[in-house]
Amino acid sequence: MDLHFINSWYYGLSPTGQLALWSVVKIAIAIGVLHGIAAYAVLVERKVSAWIQDRVGPNRVAPPFIKYVPVLGPILTRMGIFQPLADGLKFMLKEDFTPAGVRKAYFWLAPAVAVIPSLLVIAVIPFGSQIGSQKMVIADLNVGILYTFGIVSLGVYGIVLAGYAANSKYSFLGGIRSSAQMISYEIAMGMSVIPVFLICGNLNLNQIISWQVQNHWLVLYSPLSFIIFLVAAFAETNRTPFDLPEAETELVGGYHTEYGSMKFALFFLAEYSNMVATAGMMVTLFFGGWTLPFGGLDQPASGIGIAILQILIFLAKVCALMVVFIWVRWMFPRFRYDQLMDLGWRRFVPLALANILITALVLWAKS
Amino acid sequence: MAITVDRKPLTFWERLYLPAIIGGLKVTMRHAWRTLFQGGKVTMEYPEQKWTLPEGYRGAPYLVRDQEGNTKCVSCQLCEFVCPPKAIRITPPGNNGQVDRPNAEKMPLEFEINFLRCIYCGFCQEVCPEEAIFLQKDYSLTGLTRQELVYNKEKLLALGGVSPGIQKWKHKLEEAKEQETFPVKI
Image (cartoon, rainbow over all chains, first blue to last red; front, side, top):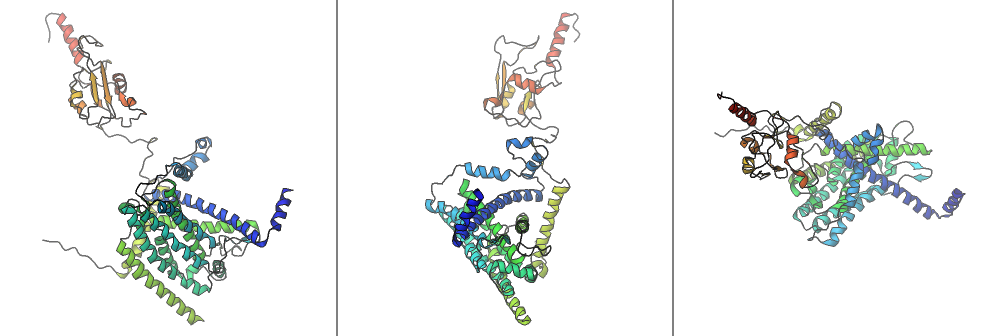
């Protein structure tokens, strides 16, 4: 009876209405999953860093009732599964303090400006094939990758604004470093993916995945592109060895020195969401997106089971790349500022240009 | 006599930065593997596991009793005087003060150590002529109020336990008993 009512309501909608409805559902789920991954990436970060440094990592936090669960409860507690919940709760309950000397409007605006681009990027990434007739991508744009680069470059504004608004020299230095770094590596990043489009002849991310289904993963065709993209991604997401904007040892906390409670949490969220989005982008461009080259998993799904399996494949690939991101952080010392600029402008930009040229020549010779 | 350090120029392979990356990945991988699967963690999980304290560790100072359960402290107040952070406060018995056994001249009426002030330096133990106070192996003193961390004589004696050593009052008693017989045999 109820189902019938919902059905008649749904089919009564115009095609635009149906699109809007599905988009809202997909956005809600995608952002929920993104936040979940971001929260647990923090836990993985702490655990992996602990293991690398011969420690144990978070192993205490548990809600009160969990100790009555026999075997599973202690195991989950030792794994620190509840740590992100406690962290989130702590951020919510902390006093939202605004220092006296800050430029208030910008100070309040900056975390939002930082977090929004990081969430917008996932709009064009195909995270699955299809469920029913719905494509598992929020916006199937024909210029998907251009949109991504456009949005990613907005990410720097939040950081620069935070550095400017805080009226503190540490924040300011963090903001300056961030703007220089992001602009430099954006160029290398943008140029590194051009060979991919030369090979595929398409900018639509779904089409790139189907090209990889017919041939092989693009990382095999253009490994240099992948390496440059990976390094630039580290720089774009402010991860070690490119974490100059938030260099704890030099700048206290970098651009978010003056922030606390939920506003700080938003910067944190932005950083990890950026990591997830970049990992998703790399999976799509170089590792075949939601496909696996066997078992018929590379064709659009007909049933809901296969569709969910394909989404899980995508998430597994993303998580694998996230672990690489985290692993690398605990291995490298930070670059000096001039080394950073040298690496960006004098190594990667020429390398990316040469990569474009060579790819174009090879393709021309082949045709 | 400056020493010239021989700096070999890096080879092309080394300048690529890749050998360093691979080396770093190997080191971190090895450590993570050891910690996870070979019990290589170097940390201890504190409240459950505690480290064995070395001999001569300077923990909290407590008052001790002799083998017969008598208070050794004679309220001379040397420890109170020497205590650098002024953590010790002794209330002397005054005239005709109470003692808990024959021949003892003086006992502290009250003996307090404020463990919020104590710096565990061991001067009280060094200065004590009666060997009545010892730094023991407690290091984790906690309380919910300031008052809770001021330990009184009763508590200090209960925590301190028994320690042999100088037994001045036992010898005094023996001496006194000898006085009653004649000739004196000392």
